[in-house]
Length: 187
Ligand code: S3P
Image (cartoon, rainbow, N blue to C red):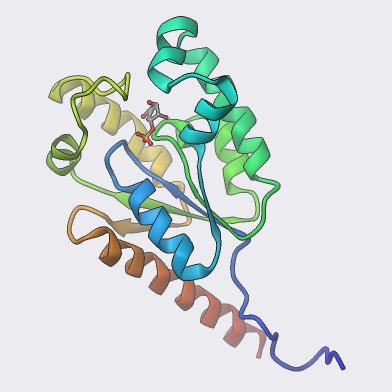
C-alpha cells in the first residue's frame, strides 16, 4: 500500500542533469560516466543535432551559418526538456542563448563544469570539428563573454583538475547533497 507520509521508495532526483560549460570542459566524458552512475540515459545535444541534420557540426556552420545551428540547438533543447532520467551535455554556446537556456533549466539541475583557459586549450583538438575554437585570444574573449551565462547554472564544479571519473563524482556528491537537503527540509 502506498503511504503519503513514508519516505519515497526512490530518492528524489532531478529529472535531468544538464552539464554546461565551454568546449573541452569534459561535458561528454563526464556526462557519460554520470549517467551510468545515476542509471540515467546520456544525451549529447551536439550528436543529436548532427543526427537530425545528417551532417557534422562543422558542415552545418560552413553551409548554413552559426544562426542556423543555434536554431537547431534551440529545437534540440526543446526536445530534451521533455525527457526524463537523462544526463544532457549541452553544446558550449547553448547556455548563452536565453531561450535555449530557459528550456535547459526547466525542471533540471544545471551544472557548470568550470575549467581554466589553459586546460581548455590543451583539451580541444585542432581538427576543425569545433568551428568556434580559434586561437588563444579568441578563446579567451569567448570564454569571458560566456562566463556570466555559465554562472547562471544551479551549481558549479571544478573540472580543471582530476579525471572525468573524479569530476563525475563531484557532480554526484552535489546531487546527493541536494537530495538530502530536500528531504531534511520536508521533515
Ligand atoms: C560550440 C561548442 C560545441 C558545438 C559547436 C559550438 C560553442 O559544443 O556546439 O561547435 O559555441 O562553444 P562542445 O562544447 O560540446 O564542444
